[in-house]
Figure 1 (spheres, rainbow, N blue to C red):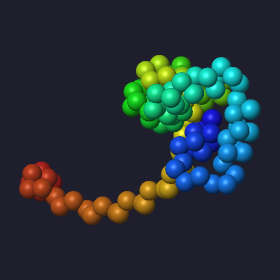
Figure 2 (figure 1 turned 180 degrees about the vertical axis):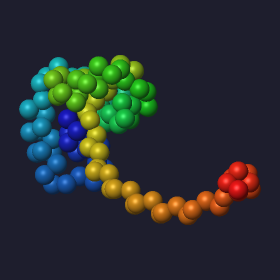
Figure 3 (figure 1 turned 135 degrees about the vertical axis):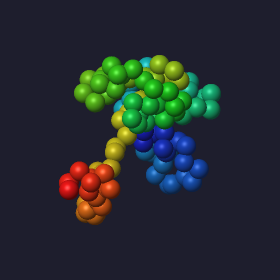
Length: 117
């Protein structure tokens, strides 16, 4: 559905786009496609990414159970707030943070010098 949305929302049409859209629509079950088309006819996108447990369509936090289902890939889930189909956004691998610079030795305070003597 993500690819279908990308092709349908793309302003620059490629020569293959119509064929690809038709083939994608043929593979999506009719109830899912009907819901997707209803959202698209209202001017909304039908699919939104889930990033840090937040729907990128409406910017609302989704329940943890929805997130767990998407991680486990057990079911198709909708955002409870906006009704868009959700998918997990690919998170790029984090680059390791540079090692912290060594700390300089702290100067002894006057109190420490008095007690040491």
